[in-house]
Length: 543
Ligand code: G1P
Ligand code: ZN
Image (cartoon, rainbow, N blue to C red; front, side):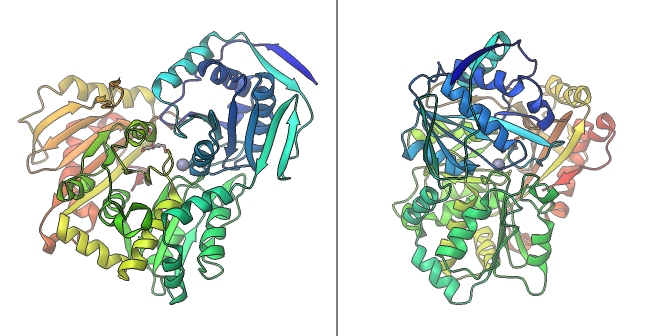
């Protein structure tokens, strides 16, 4: 077997974003593109000589080809071993778990998460460090630096490995262990949750629908929910992973998981509904007749986690990303827990989890997780909900009503304006930034600004500072709006507008969120000139 050194040149734009490098699949398939980036990862992490890495992905188009390239490059870089999921599949939380449980030095996850897959859709590559979490900025900065200076990469010449057969094979002296993607993960879930109680719930006639959206959680959900917990066959729908996710958009929200929403709002709805995204780290929770926002879900999980064996000892603290609603803060305050506010992106939770400052974390973008891994974890959230439902024996709607009555309801919504011209979106943000100092006291659509700033985060564990993390505007009376530009999009810019208002009166807690937020929605448009600057009259996606 021959190791080859291939000359190359830096390729522009290989800067990892909120969650790794995401580009159009054809961009990744272009000559040297993937190879340049992988070599830059090796350089950015100080080489792979003698290291053990984990490799897996969400099964999207090009996943299988990219895996063969990465294996050859790991071998050429002198890695000792790569642990890879069968057929190069591993959900993101499962990959995080394997890195941790096998004591690997790090891992590569091939995924563009909830973005569609296919030759004309998206692909992505993310490096996770030995704690199992996404590489922190100091590492991604090193990787990016390497992409700008690269002049050659190394790769072994070899046949493709058969990744469908479990067991150990070799490339050029490097060991490749092909593992079942589900079993380690299922074992971890068994430790955290009361599987007997949940099985008894299903045995008592409790019904559920889990929409795997033709993405990676299909095999996990089928094995755990139907296989171990005894949910009726057919509970998991769209359970077969497909390279193009069946032509769908594997993002578990009311828009892209509309089929599930329709079933759950219908007359014969099951007791509980859930969905997960392309790589299995996001989740959506729906009860019969009620959608639970991700911001509310993390608050309910934090309030009730002690009902599951893995969290019976209580929580060390909680954390949420800045644009996520403050519902979690209210639970934390009532329980005397520290509540951290971090920038958007799971990587910012890593230090808090490692330092034992937080146990449960959440993001408004359907991300919830705990210190069991260092990624958000879709199926974990679903199982914690099931454990809570098994203990309380109450319907989801009743749990929500009681939660709001106790802690208040943080009405919440996110409005996304997608594929906006980058200049216009940046112009909108800059104009807000320029006016931050003068906004307080000013009125917009009948609401008065109380304070306004651009969020910066000082990591309490390592002291690092992250600036430019979104513009926050608080209005008199507690309502707030946050503006930020997406760091995961692949076309133009996506403007995200996060809207929130607190309602403490139980008599007013059953309103439609868009109605309840109408005033703040109008104020957001007035203060930022969204319509005027973007030319859009309505958001593309409302969650
Ligand atoms: C989005 C979400 C963010 C999440 C990330 C990765 O990032 O907003 O919460 O961590 O995807 O799943 P954004 O596109 O907003 O930068
Ligand atoms: Zn994801």
